[in-house]
Image (tube, rainbow, N blue to C red):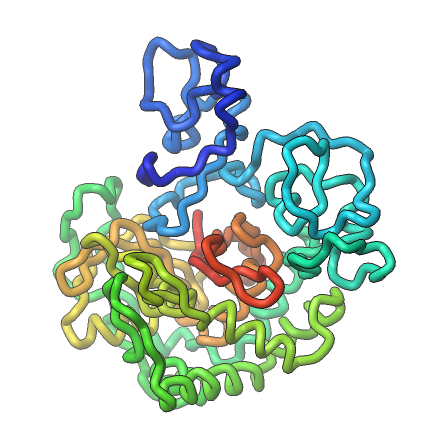
Length: 421
């Protein structure tokens, strides 16, 4: 991750008051490793286990992440998104819900306070979706919507297991034969260690199923290069509608909606559908001011920015491009514990000349399962990791919000979602 792009949640005033603190991250967030210091404060310190105790004050936010940070064993709620505001007071959110951030306040009541852990103690009760309008005051013009409201880690694991068991459209063991070949110890070398393709066999009859067919129809609607404006024709917009309609017919997506409905997050299925369309297909700019990207394009189709592949977490997309000899499988660096599908594989590859250092994909899952699992984590733990369960095995899903633009009442588009290990 480029340190120039990192956002450090530490004020200039705080930095001036702690020059030369060798045992603290104050005034040192993002500094290069320095052997004269007893601990470090950059993005690599967690990998080497030498972070300072207060490293959490450094909040790294990079929506253009190339997603190579998979060897992080931190808790579900990633340490990379914790701010320095730990001093919570008992000040109430009464009449303050949705107010703008004011550094003079000891605690806050807007839709970002949980992300930065500086909410007032009664924020969830008074300001979450479904709270009485009498409690919301005049300051709530920005947003009444709060993703992740009152959803526990246990609930995420339970509902993800339900989604897993509901995926009747997933590939059977006989439908896919993988040729994984070499495992790489160092993904930065960009070495092609595998002479053969990853997919030795795929039963393409499964692609005739409605959700697969609708998903594949979307893949040629995008230009992979960021900076190129994406405009949808009437036919392409119709293809988006068909895909959403088809996946919402499945048990997987019905179970996901039922869960969110019980949590009070969506009153009607149409409301859920409209939100899915905007969070996944809504366009935003990753480069040059053009509307050149969306959550769906980044996660499922893949993009190229500055000569590097980012996103690209669809096994179906991978297989189809490999079959056309537009994609060269290099190696893998993670093989999940699953013996049936869906499985999880972390791999390195070249896409028509552009490199992907580490790309994780669910293998053999249906389009609706991928869509549901990522949506579950994005809504439940936006901008964080969430631990899900698939067939009794746990794995984390990392999500990032696109924070530069929004839709509706300050809702955020998906920047990326992917399995991490």
